[in-house]
Image 1 (tube, rainbow, N blue to C red):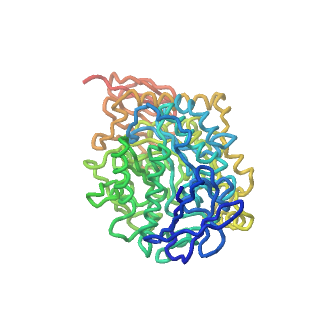
Image 2: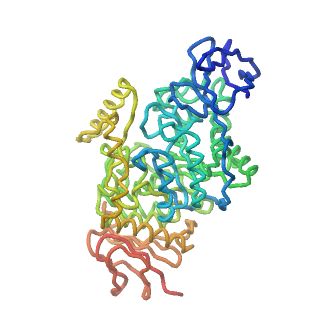
Image 3: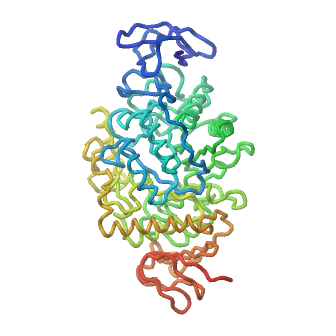
Amino acid sequence: MEFRVWAPFAATVDLVLPPADHPVRMGSGRGGWWAVEVPDAGHGTDYWFSVDSGKPLPDPRSAWQPYGVHGPSRVFDPDRGRRPGSPWPRRDVLGAVFYELHVGTFTPEGTLDAAAARLPDLRALGVDVVELLPLAAFDGERGWGYDGVDLYAVHEPYGGPEAFLRFVDACHEQGLAVCLDVVYNHLGASGNYLSGFGPYFTEQHQTPWGAAVNLDDTGHEEVRRWIVDNALRWFRDFDVDALRLDAVHALVDDSREHVLAQLSDATAALSARLGRPLTLVAESDLNDPDMIEPTADGGCGMAAQWTDDIHHAVHALVTGETAGYYVDFGTVDTLAHALTRVFVHEGGFSTFRGSTWGRAVDPTRHAGHRFVAYTQTHDQVGNRALGERLAALTTADRCAAAAAVVLTSPFTPMIFMGEEWAAGTPWQFFTDFDPDLGRLVRDGRREEFSRHGWDVAVPDPQDPATRAASVLCWDERQQPAHRRMLAWYRDLLALRRAEADLRADDLRAVRVTTGPGSDVVGRGWLVVHRGRFDVLVNLAGGPATLPSPDGAQPVLAWGPVEPVDGGLRLATDGAAIVRLPEG
């Protein structure tokens, strides 16, 4: 087989094959690429690269790091022993129900094979897409995955690349699509050897993580290709259906063509060749619909984007929290705005940012399914000091109301693992760095929360007990309160699947009526009009009568509902979905 590596400034590059560590001089080629043919090498061969006779380093495109990120790379053949493709009908994931999970805490074992064993539970819940937090190899055994350094490899403690192939096959056999979270805006601090090969980073731009990934400086063409090829590889070699691109607002790119647009066009071309949908979903803090505009019209070409404004509107309303970035949220009227216009900050003033922010969505161009909505995510839970889930911050009645809002909305809904049964376990920030880096991370995190007024004992991310506390407890589902919430989620998803009006994504058709006190944080009611259905949400803190036409029939309700003059009376905080009378 041929070994290739990009090292544009090197005088020599050697291929090192352990255990003998005998160097094989590679030949230079065009564009800074070096190559050598080794006839006896193949799947399972370990190797390093040595630039200018320096320390042997793992391959920047390593597909397998069986000894961790500081060890040699290993050749991986994704077609070796692979089962034939599953006959399940491929689908566009927009409008489907996503389920975000972290492999390391989804089960006690923390592996892809253990996660695969739980897929029937997700299918029974009614989700359509399994979204995995990053799998790229990172230093240590445990972590969130956002400190990956070998972006082409699958973290070995999760089972490595062969386990990921098995997981994708298992998902498809269950009729579930697979979305993989990928991180191109930065790399982790430990095990990042890319600069030993070439200009993968540039000091011309700075990000919260230091020097930016080089998207527009000398050598940027090959760095961009490294990113694009990585994304295409997950689609092509691992049969992944969608990618979620982390924090794309941190991709600093002054090129004429943004790297996201380049990736979008390359993905569209691969989709045409493979004959199946391939989807790119961006996490963006910009509140800019250009993110989902076609590349032909000057946009970034993403199929969809996450929408934190919807999360903030729901979270602040049901919890009453208005500190930090929740400061402009918390009322029923604000949630009504988000449900009809997506972005709360759409060109007006953002108090938290101290400036105007965002641009308005055009409902004639931007369908609701282009926006991913959620009440909880790994970020919104895990970046709290104690990692509290929504169920720890408010009542079960309000959690149920929040679920009804999102799962019947015109958006692409997403559930964070365990949310469906109001899991009692937190989901905290945890790491497994070397002692010096771990101490810096621990102290920095505690200092940051102290600076923002959190007077709590922030868990030590390096302590294995922090990860252990974050592992889902599946047995909870047998307890009455958790069993009731799980049934509510299943019923909501079943109703959404059965009724086209509750999946409809035309934002122009969404109307919201709000009730008295709708401008008061944490109080009020709203009725979301969804074709032949109304979604009634009571957050008044007690019984409330919500307007509903005579003859409206509740088809699903959390808490007692009875007809009264002028509408339906909801006895407690909660929600009801009612079918409107004909005509």
